[in-house]
Image 1 (cartoon, rainbow, N blue to C red):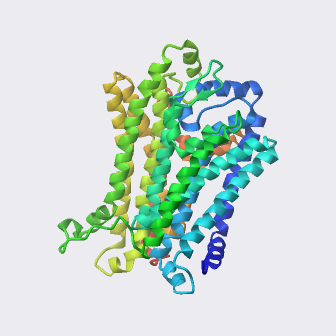
Image 2 (image 1 turned 45 degrees about the vertical axis):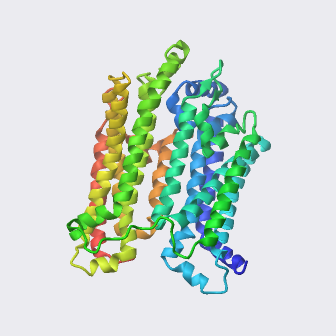
Image 3 (image 1 turned 90 degrees about the horizontal axis):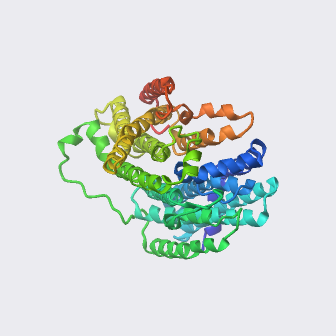
Length: 536
């Protein structure tokens, strides 16, 4: 294929910085948590942790199913789901960055003007993506070797994560050819990754623990998730590499679909085409508020549907878990010792875990809508500001819409969960569920304020820095307490300061401070956006 090697070298050269960042992130998470668990926990403490997790559906949903008490099994149970998401997002961003985003910026057309095969770009993107996924998988294997874990088990774990990465690399390539913009092309696989995590978590939360409470067998929904397949291989207990064979037909089907679509597709085309506009614009488009709402209505509707689905999941799964556990006094005793849920109520515990995840989703929605301002600035900024349109007005409308959407995602999820729980007979849990949802709002506003500041001060980093800070600080809050001497780093995470409504006399002042900081960051971003040049 003419020009394939040259395009591949170009992509690898452009991505060398990102490649190092992803490899370091993977290298840091895996071996450091192995070392932390090994140094901070005795064998008895690990057994106690696993038994607590085995009977706490909230922990099972977030972490996964434990498969033993040795250091490798406990570490895999703690981080497998997060690593799966990390590989999925990495592959998605890579695929969209080198396909649809390049087409929007005109780079693909410039490369195609040379002596280059028309499919060299997509083929190079697939190859460079495989190299990136393979490198991160090799880092996991190397980290296991350095910390003394079994190499065969580590190889199964690395292959499982690589399977997840390759699946979302193919989904990203396909989405880039189907969707009309880079933003929508990245959103679809991102939502699928979140859905895969939720489906995996649902299957794990409904799993069945053995008599020793050290192993949990996932329920059938976990088998519907590629992220679940990597975990179901059980690499550090009784390795089941045959589970990873499920990736083979899926990847073959995706590869055929991607190749067929790429051959028939013209440059810049998409299967989902924007609807033709009317000859005369609606009066709602006469001002910046209507314009912003019109541009973001698809994103808003998508996130509101996700919020309703998350609320329905909370209200539907929690009672089922409670019914399955109510007749086991040993389980009840262990639940009362769960740190995240002092009430000992499995319904509240699962709601706390799921609505915390929903808070992350609401933050993603707010970041996406606020960050879309810079995308519009680059695409049609000169046309917009040639009109009598004040830049602060456009900035304020994005802030208002992002705030409204983030708030609506939190409120809809908590409200739906409360209604479903009340209909299932858990009327007393409904007010607490609403309070849990409301407690996540300051985090959403904090990340919105940070994104607004970056729009004004440093817009070029909007494609990666808000996401690194969102997921990185979330993981920091989750795992920093495991490291002896580094537990204070958890205070850097906004999630650390969320007031827990389940705890009596919870301190809500940190939430007030977060909202005040978010307002300050937003004002600073707006002032800078007004004065800076376009396309900075």
